[in-house]
Figure (spheres, rainbow, N blue to C red):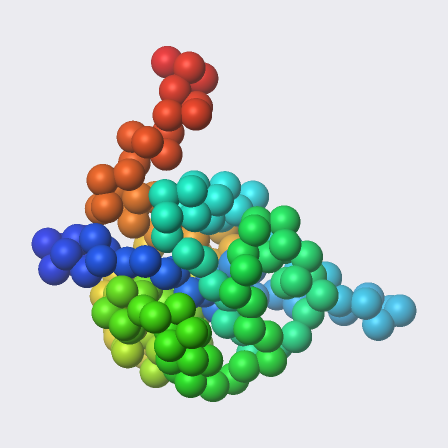
Length: 180
């Protein structure tokens, strides 16, 4: 999907990016070890994108149906203060978060990849999905980045939001000498 002028207008308003975890920040694969431990893989590109977006003033939240200590650790490493685990009711969780932050849904982008995310994708001011989501979920999104979840999709979203809000150059400023 290309980003239309309507998408750009919606993106300029965003003050909160809420993300599902499995299938968005990860590729959706769960690894269970013989000792019962579970592991997840997170993409480092997504992490820097989240940090850049937060430095621009956009808050980031995680709303996930599963509970996992890896999600807690990743959120702490990225400075994500709003982490809601064990929430299959994504829209209810998103609305409660918006109320707590004093934000209308129109100022929120939500990215999810499966049916539990669908109501939140449709209700958010900017509904997003990922390339690896089922087509019947993606078709309800305002935009789907070209990268799959867990493989840089969130970074692509963060970069697009930064650019739409006029914060791209400021986000690159700390790296300017390395870019030249």
